Amino acid sequence: MDLKTLFDGYDAITRVADSGRHALNSAEIVLASGVPHEFRTTVHPELHAESEILSLAKTLSTMGVQNYALQVFRSIGCDDEKLNAVSTAGYPSADLVAQLSGMFARFQLRRE
Image (cartoon, rainbow, N blue to C red; front, side, top):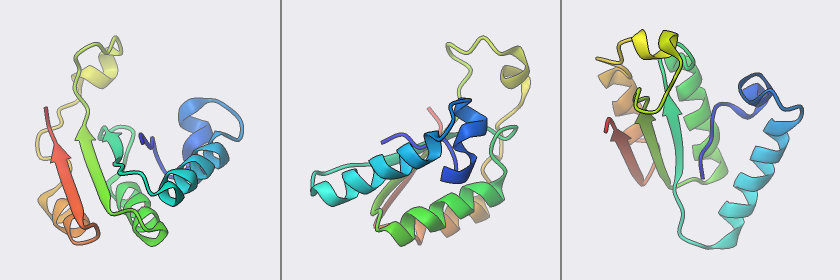
């Protein structure tokens, strides 16, 4: 399941009222289903402060998420020149990755 940000920040990202509540509802359904799953978030340094990523991870861990992946933004297919111009080198930091690795049974950082 793709999660864009903290549930209380969803409306700002999606520009859809009440979308955070719906995303939370969906996450709870997935967790309760017993079906193998992965939660993932695509992150960009202009859109996701490391503190926000950590807060989201803590929320997901508390909810019982076991399998979580961070996907670092790639410019392929993105027409937003401002986002494409920002370097993702060194993002997220090794410290944040280490913290997240300890919060989930399975954690993966994807750069490609």
